[in-house]
Length: 388
Image 1: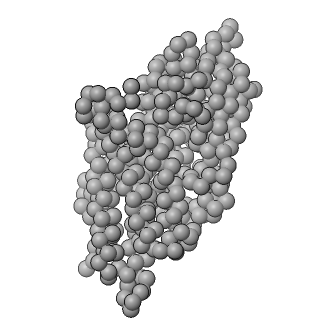
Image 2: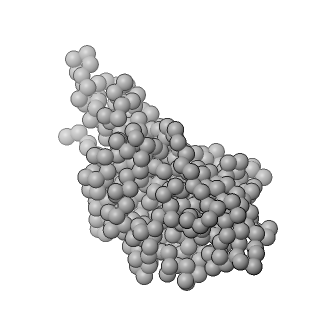
Image 3: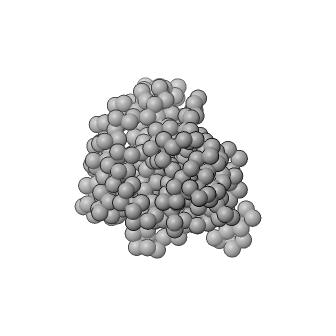
């Protein structure tokens, strides 16, 4: 009996009943609601906003945060499995949920006041408000400490000026977490997007993450009340803590995309007849499939262990960097190999492989490029920072 699926090392046995239930619920949602429509959204460069209420109802926004704010209070492995299944559908969908939770709700929960949490977290959890995270700038990506956005204190509040770029959800957001230099320190602000001086033009003509809204944020003398400063945010460590939450989800999500590509490659090569037999019978094809499954399995184990460490409070950010770096590489390599095995058919939207491949080119870069995560690991190994 040939092996089927991608759970080659019986990782299901390492999951609790609740974790499997969460995964299976999101898996059904992706199969029934996402897969049938996502190619059209990718082709037309639109985000499936019609899915937001269903994702909110399942508790996917801020999934690890407490129930008192309307969140699911799931553990980190369950949350990782959510990210895995969403990205098995499309990276843009996982990005949306990841930004809403890890980059908007998490900083409000971690750095905000009780009043800020009570006001914003339930609205964001229910999907009644959409958020974005403004850190990256046109001239400052891997070096966020060089940001040029400024916040100036006045007797009416804070006046923000600057531009952010490559902001997921920007154009459709109701609220933005904006990071700016204020009185010599980096601080976070809750900025309502309807405020005068705030604009969020969408970035067009993308060849990747097409089923995702990506924007510039332009702040021109935007006046933010004192009550919208995140009081416990101070220094570059604060936004980097947020990024570490998002990178954790990516480590799981990339394996979901890899899984989709691998499964399509297996089915395609078993059904594609050349030289009077399925191409899956050829040695070169089997070598690629064996390599794909091996790398996916290694990535699954890294993600699972990362989640357990996070739940135990033992996670170091360099471990997240290793997982993000490795698993996105696995996802991108798997997508490329699957496309290769599917020949010219692999470039069409009849199959999801090329869509995943294009998306993963962006995932490879955002939330810390592959190079930056390499240097984070290098510093952890040697104690010597190569980027300073």
